[in-house]
Length: 294
Length: 242
Image 1 (tube, one colour):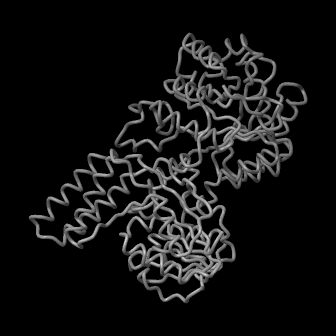
Image 2 (spheres, chains in turn purple, green):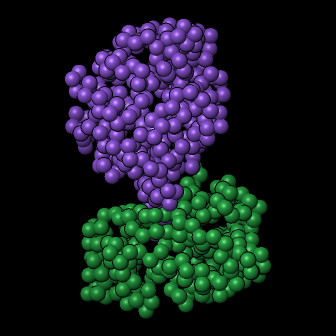
Image 3 (cartoon, chains in turn blue, cyan):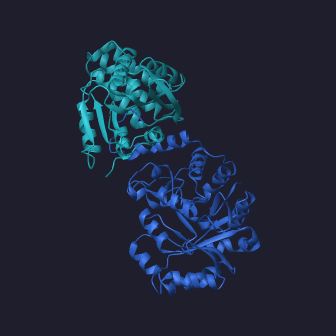
């Protein structure tokens, strides 16, 4: 599988990162098999979080077995020092390892959160302390919030080394600043910050719970994913062709094998085809529904 | 909210000088290229359309914030009220496929008249859709309905070499050709828009003829759903010899 430099971290990540939340829905034996399958395809970057049920615990055995082959990202939703310090130790304990390669501030949504994180006694103090103590190697951020907020975070966190954010044809077709994750990608590229893409496989929102009860959804993702080999391949190719360093696999284990195949076969995507994918979804919520032309 | 500029438009304009230029969008439709030209810093954009609804749509959708640079002109493209030698950049995005050959030549002549002597032109359109594409049947039905009502087809898909030759006859030299879409995604919304054209023609006919035509359009749209077929290309020209 193709590898790309993860910003200036020194890490060469495969163009696919395994979203280990998928392990949460498997028994331990199945989780072990899943990790073996992912490693068989050459994937060397895994991502997990303490909020993904017991994914950390289920990743643990195979992570320890193959520790040298896996660059591990983990994250915290804690915004203050105490909580973040506790969560780092808890994740290390649950994973059964000494060092997390990339530790990310998870799910940044509001400006006030950024204030708290970066203030004295904020989560960033705990993360930097852990880095100095050798518990983590690199500092990152994840967000599907406002791109301007992400840019602000890049400005305010000097030692930020990676950013994880959404990118897919729906987002790429919208010009409003609230969808301008391409600006984030450009900034990261110019500053040597690594980029991880999420929501590459999102098709749309689930039908309302009146139409389809949550318990009746066929996939564990909180959005409705594309789910055919062809659609998954073109979504992967699109995301990887945007210039992201790596694309994170979707959370449902049933989709992972198709995504592994897509990533293994990745050979780029020409621009006319990228535009075709954007055009196809642009009309989903166009202000002018009836259009003859593209 | 700013109007989203389609990627096709952005790509077609990417290597053109737009900033500071007086531009004309020929066949403004819902104003997609007008929005792209304004976003790229055009000094002024004449959005020309012969359709009052489209003119209103362009004003409403694109006019906010650019009113001082946007002039919506309701006129026939074969005879616009614009001065000779007044436009730096002319665009025709998805226009030529609704112009039968005789009209195409007249429109090309008029666009050449208003363009400055060193003017530029961008023509974006669909290549002839593959014969085995399902959308081809819908387009054939649309043309059949148009011929019955108007005695002329509604749609004419030109190969890029043909459009290049038509404009070359008016003094335009080709600077580059690019592929904008491959494949073209014909979504349900596009197919419905084409079916609407059939319905409009059908409505002018006696029920015995119009109703089956409208029903056929509806059946075709339902059967096709959506389809990816064919390509969309972009030709860039300059006036005079290269």
